[in-house]
Length: 347
Image (cartoon, rainbow, N blue to C red):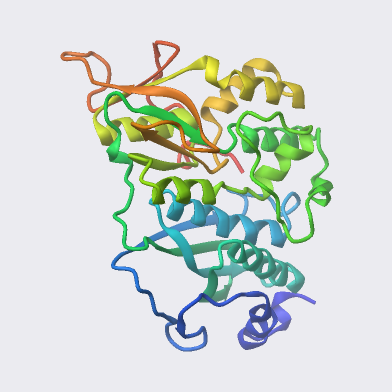
């Protein structure tokens, strides 16, 4: 049966059993607003969208994949501020001719992703139209100040946790036809995977396609480092390493030097998975949607992270872009390198 064969209330009745409630929920979904009781002095809030044809293709991604991805990319944004995801709300537009099972699977994927953090899916909106998902996350800062991308200071280590270039490689294998879309079957039914260790070679093309379809950001590592006071600046790497490093450099008014030797294992890993070396290098530096974390620290490298560069002062009269810059192996990285939703046709 299709979405158009059901009323809104009937559709909500199908998906609600798959959506967990947040801890401290006072008024659950069903009223004009959900109400959550939080002890935090401050919360972090972020919104992301997934648009069919722009961010994913239905022939590649199941409803479960899209729901999982929608929650995870928002969870990464919250964790990038040092906030634990506690609640999600989703505004979902679905075509009338879409199989209703797709909608149920979206809810199941989003619900399973939320459960990873003990978070709830506590409301939203549902309408008929082009397939689009807008998801908002509420994150609990637990009484701590947020960790900003503007906190990098000269002398800091530049550190990273998660994977680099895997999502871009997965997209490459799908668009080239090297991997069949059905490779989603390599994933457990509930979407659970441990985030890949830094620098580990992927276990073939299927592993990187899995990251494209169902990213698994190392949220726990980011939150642990923040709680321990080990991090000075932090951000989610969603638009590519060098593009997001530049954002950190400009926000902090510093220079960021990325060490090619520190990324050799990432490039080699993608080559082993079947990507040409030059293309693999571009994916590691500029590929988006891996949702790892980039940070700086004046201390030793936290467990689960690795150093990939350093932070330095801007030189007086430096001719590079004012406000901050990024170098790779001592060479300036041109502004605009990386993923830009308004300049690319990537899906």
